[in-house]
Length: 428
Image 1: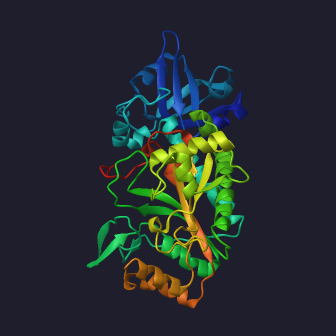
Image 2: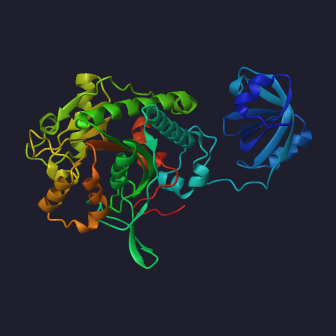
Image 3: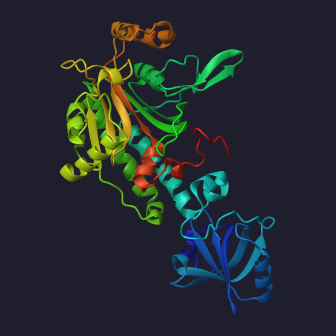
């Protein structure tokens, strides 16, 4: 008999079926016992009246893996409107050692550090697994939106030979006796691949050895990177980002509706035209000094409140960041060279995306490096490609975990990360 999932039970009323999963909860009443079995799709309720089956059930523990063969009966009060009766229950392994928290309760009462210490079992809780389902659906929507626009998915090295890719600290490692580093981003490679496919994207891990210990930073996270050629300026990149975000949210709605319902959240609408303000205007709105070189988290929160109040939008573009705060490959604003053709996208008052137009002429790269007092040699393999013809191009990168945290209302990005890596955590 083929195993079926809990969500398929309503189509089998009156039939004998086989399900399998984890003992989510047992309720041992005087005249009847209930066994709740959890599988990847949801919960099934098993009604036990036979004394021998009940005796066996009493020996089981929560999280023991079992197989149940029983008859499907309609019951509007049961999960999915059906329950299983006259069961045969067979353990598929030894009785499980119960985890240090109850997974059957609506919310996990354990502290976040305790959950992370016991992540393999904590992630089984419906609220924790729901966030990961939303993450998977968002990535599927990301890919679908870009595939529909003729982008090509690429896969670039995560071990690199230079530690000078950006201002962030890097993780050093030994590469057959030579120094190497974990890649901080696929930035250089995705630019080079614009010279091959014109439009590319990548989903992959990036590594930042910055000693952050905040609710929004991880030392390893998943970056959704995009780069496209033949742009007029950064506004073409912003238009693709807007369409990509809409695709990601459509993917979540289509593929993870049950997870969204489990968390009780609403999905935001992406405006046809996301409001945008120049960096100098953003400082004024946030009440920051006019000479402030960057936006602090408090400024971002103020801008998020302004975007919601003035435009009814959860999203806000801040354009024209100072060149001094952007990487050397950023294209300056031709009208205001001290400012860049770069942008950040704020989502509910937090920076979610950084992007912009890049330099595309070889001589401009030499000049940009010289202006910053940096030698060309560490960048030679990257910069040399621009001698062979590169179109005007630009791109962006979305932090997946931060996106899901803002979407679900999580207060800490670790709540939506399966096995977070940060300043203090390298296990499990």
